[in-house]
Amino acid sequence: MTTAGVTKYSRTALTGRAGVVVNYRTGHTMVLTGDTLTRWTALLAYTGAPPPVPVRESQVSWGTQEAPARLRPVPATPWAWRLAAASVLAVTLAVRTCGRRTRRFGRLRWLAEIGRTLPGPATSHARLAVCSVRWAARVFPARVACLEESAAASLVLALGGRGGAWRHGIATDPIRLHAWVCDVHGQPVEEPEQTGDYTPINAPTTDLERGPDVRPAHPAVRPARQPGDDQP
Image 1 (cartoon, rainbow, N blue to C red):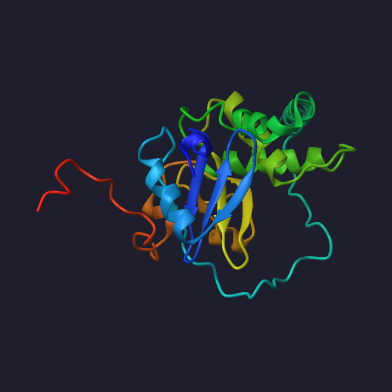
Image 2: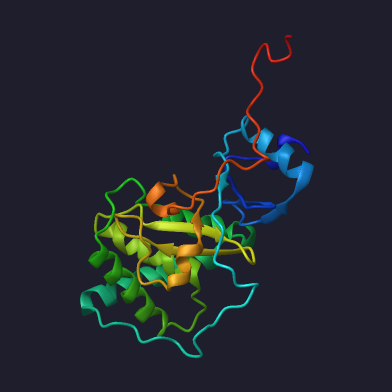
C-alpha cells in the first residue's frame, strides 16, 4: 500500500476488529483488517489526514433491530421555518444532483459544514431546523435520506448564525454509517435512541459525544518512529 490512497479527505474509524475508511470527497468507503490496517494507520502520520477515531461498541443486536412500519409524525413548526427549510432543501437537492456523481458526497458534506466555525445551536433551534426540513422533505418528490436531511438542517442553522451541528459517524454490529444534527452540547437532535451508538468521525470527538465507554487505543495504531529508535 502507498500513500496514494491516503489523502486529507480520509477519515479512519477503528472498531474492535477492523478499520473503516471514508473518503470525504468521493464518499468511497472501505474496510481494512490485519496488516493492511496497520500499514494504513502508520501512513496517516505522514499525510494531511486526521488521526483515526476509536469507535465505541454498539449495543448487541446481531444485525437485527426493530424499525417503525410507518413514518413518525413531524412536530409542527412555524411557517417561517418551514418556508426557509423548503428553500434550503431545494438547494441541497440541486447541489446533490448537479455535478459528477463521484463527488456527490463531497458536495453535500461541504454544504453541511458551511457553518462549522459558527457557535453551536441551542437544542430548541436545532429541533426547529430538523423538524422543518423533515416537513419539507415529505412534500418534495425526491429521495431525502439522512445525508440530505442533515445537510439541509445544518444549512438552515448556518443561515441563522449557528453551526458546527453536522455529524457523520459509524456504528458497529453491523458496520453502518449515519448523518445527523446535534445541539451545542453535542447531543443528537430529533433522533432515535440508537443514534447514540454512532461515533462521530468528521469532527474532534469529545468525551461527551463518545460517552463513558471510550475504547482504549486500537492495537493497529502504532506510535510513529522517532530518530534514534534503532539505537541500542
